Image 1: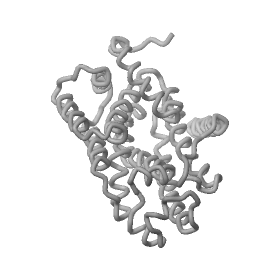
Image 2: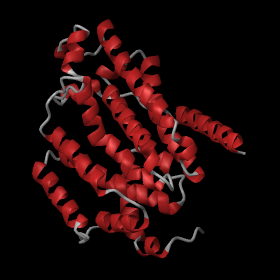
Image 3: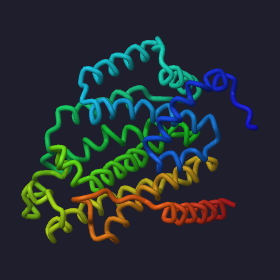
Image 4: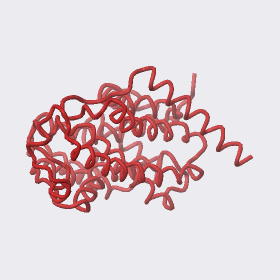
Length: 293
């Protein structure tokens, strides 16, 4: 049995609470990061629990007051007082252990506040700014658990989070439309001669497919930029980060293979497809190790 650092052992129940949230809410994320050494994995679960709490307050509970209360709790935490809750107690251990940046936690809440008062972005830059706040910030939150020297990796970590958020948007076009949200920029829709009602589906038009592929290429470029940081990621963390990257990226390939069903349903990875991706991860990790030998 792996021996934990004492402060993690003392808060085992608090971290278990965060782990349950992560496992229940994101199978791809959990599949990837559950392979880390326990302290690193548990720390990422605590960060994820914070992000999921904020996200659910907006998307599930529609509770703007609750989101403001979460921001106040974060301010309390920033001032050195740990709220009496499993998530906060776990995060306190994380902040004691790793060189964490509180600013990016506030940034993520800013992104959630943008969702709570949603307005369709007009430009690609506005969309990418939003992607930073809700997901690029998350890349920066977990970076200290992945790299001993995280500072040089800030840009690719943001690119990875943003790529994942663009993937979410491209996966959920139809679902978001039904909820009254269009994340694809209005100027981009106009460029491809699309109206908002063209997102109603269920069959995507040729122009929609061209728009989708335009955004998918931007996401793929961001994934490629993110992969450049892999040699500077701690070797023990590389398999998990590669798995998270490739599992998410695979969703774009699946959507294309299935002829873009995203206006009427989500695409997802079957267990067989996950296994194929994880086999790719093992190969890439081995290749990287050989290069460094």
